[in-house]
Image (cartoon, rainbow, N blue to C red; front, top):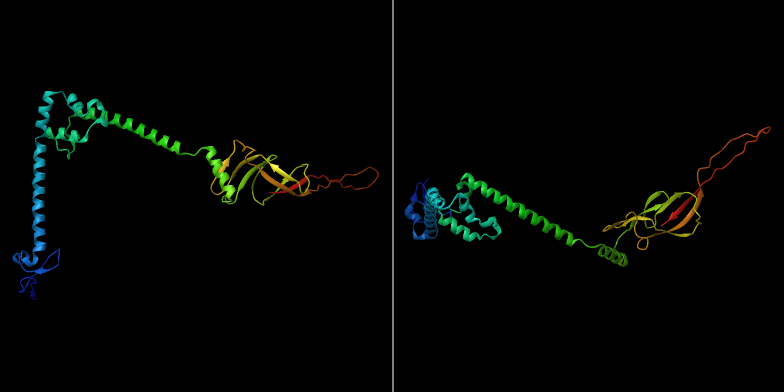
Length: 277
């Protein structure tokens, strides 16, 4: 089926579509027409640029083929070692100006965009690798020391942490506090309004206010302070109230008295103290 060309307005059996503007045309003349000059100029401009790039690439290949001769001329004036260290004086790579290095390589016929390492002979490669390993070792040690000093200097001091914790407690922004306390031979994790049961005989009465000073650690949602092994009692303490004292585990002991069949109960008792924090 014949279709109409959108440039010359003629019916043609086959039409082409411009990839940029999607207009349909029938021939090269229509493609180059003034009606389509915006796309056609860009197309030919791109062709010219591609041709220039191809010529530049061929020139680069040609220069690369002449590199061995240039290197031989340079090495004839100096040994391989001197040639390498002329580019890297005293193996101090930090002091090398990259632009100056590029200019020097260009004068030797070396394309800086190519793999320069492959252009060196075995002795030059060995010397370069020694210099490179020395450079990496020096800079890696320097960077590690710098990062360590930065990390250490950024850590807050103990006084700063204590001040921040005190500020949170003062403003009641610390959330729910917890502490691990040592009472006798046992350890307990307690929070506000907790109740714990301790066994033993202690001279406390119901209602007594006691102060626990053996605090292993104390913390909240944002911080935790650990003691070595306990926290200073002048800074941290837990206040508790004795709310109950009872007896534990009644043991029944049966024994017989001569001539009388009397059964007597003897109660072995042990105090149980309940404390509220």
